[in-house]
Image: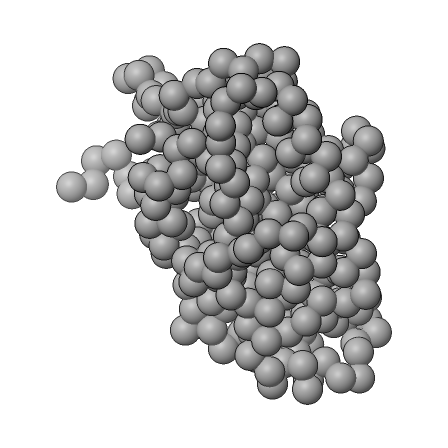
Length: 284
């Protein structure tokens, strides 16, 4: 058993929630923001831009499938399609234009933000500003009030990936999901330490190649290189695609190696020495 030949994650297109948050951060809140926040996050739709992003993602996916089929000619692989049951991810799956059947899976849902998700951006900042700052430093372990930590999101994603491992080894898998769910997924696939996840999330506005854009595509592969039909036993490469600008080197990241993280004693020492002691050395 091993992971699919390719595992391709697609973040949903720009949603109405994304739009109202963006406007509020600019100081021009949408007049219907409060009404939107009264609707559960699972029922919020895509914007017109989000629909166009999904269509461009579909064009990229079709082209990718054709190129991969040509290289892997003679080998038979099925293709499976999965989606979070949230409306915005199912709408993204629809608007890709792919004439396929998508399987909803609750393990792909967005991180639960609890009470915070039902407040306008202005109220979030007034009531939870200090608490939200901890997300920047403790991204992996921090839990929104009545919500989920990314560690908890990882727990359900592990179950989903275990299913892919058991059932989809001879498949290509496409997954319509959410931004923070995909951050948690990247940390699993790429063996990140908690601090690395926090740093990447904090710096994403400066690192546009890794920024979790709407309809960002993150693709993992066991194929050893683009021209070869030889497959590794494990995921060995990852790349990030911006389907709105697939040729833009500033927002796309070409194939990078994926390596399991291991520490020898010297590396363990270097890691722990990044963190300071809070008690004196002579304190028992």
